[in-house]
Image 1: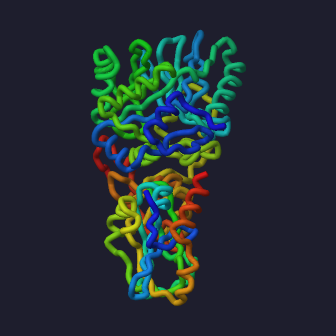
Image 2: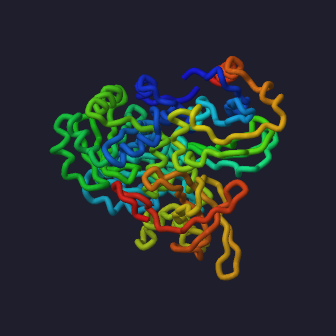
Image 3: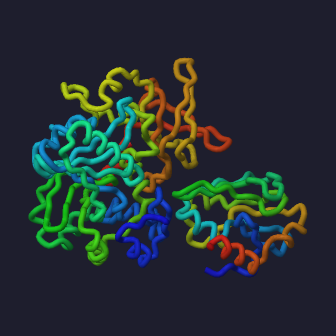
Length: 129
Length: 363
């Protein structure tokens, strides 16, 4: 599966979609769900929670293991994808549409510093070998 | 260098995700572990279990040797082909391994042991053989492959594939086996479903696997094997028990014969032991996933207690999390306990396992 070029990525395998209104949408990458296997449980942050970059903020559990999700940037949680809690398998079906939460960035410069698709592709390939 | 079963290339050809399982290169899944799990509960799946080791014990009075070697009583094996599940214990009562013994003839029994313990099991058996019955021949059978075909339709599919097997195995009851040509067919398994475990010459394994696939038996990996056995409430060696635990605190008292006069290795230690902990089932009430090594805590009659999850995970059949846990014997079925998961205490109910048998939820 190709890595979407309109998204940014963290080294810990979250994707970030900058929206037109200045907010961002966050999920976990296709590569991350592939490593984890069938997802069975998702725990999302509370709306209103203020996160620092790289702070543990959600949990994605598969049949195999629990994985922490880290906030790719600093900011406030403004929405969560609640239906995902009942259907965590959506992440396996399409990791880039099964978003976890939306944030209002407190330091937009952090977004620019994230990996672009090419750099993230390189990271994934280096982990595969 | 990882060890490989005779089906290694076959798994790769079927796009298996391979993992290092105790030094063996084994399939974890072939795409979706959940789908494989459901297929076994509803239809038929097959597992490569060739990493497990069959050991043949041959000679005069094998039975006498096994009476001493294992905790269950081989005198229960009266009909040829009958199988017995047992623990093999240290003199201190710790579990060296759990295994299945097949009685074939008075001078030939076959024991199937776990992969991760195979070397130490064999060394232990040889040591006891030298001391107790030096004339017996003990032969590891790495020349055999082993395939478990499990599920409500498993037996019928095997009959389609192995010529003349139906007549020879249709009447087998659970824990009975028969030899059909080059195939050793046992009505046993590790999933809580009907089916067979089949030993065959290693060189024939890829063709057999492919033939089963041709009658729509789906390949299933170690991932599904683990969730199926957990639902079935079957212990996994190295997780739910090891040499520091005895069968009485591992939910395996039913496999230990303390009544007969027969002496076996570990018996005296078991008679002397004061059992303070037992293995129970847990069903998670809150949302989350129970995992091995999570701490179980609670209070009963004003006394705080602690225990530990030995195996935990998500039950695909029940669509919630379940676990096996070792907790003080005072905590019984129906009680509620707390499990420490990350920074939270989640509520779980103590239940009698198995959780699932023959496709039905029992708790």
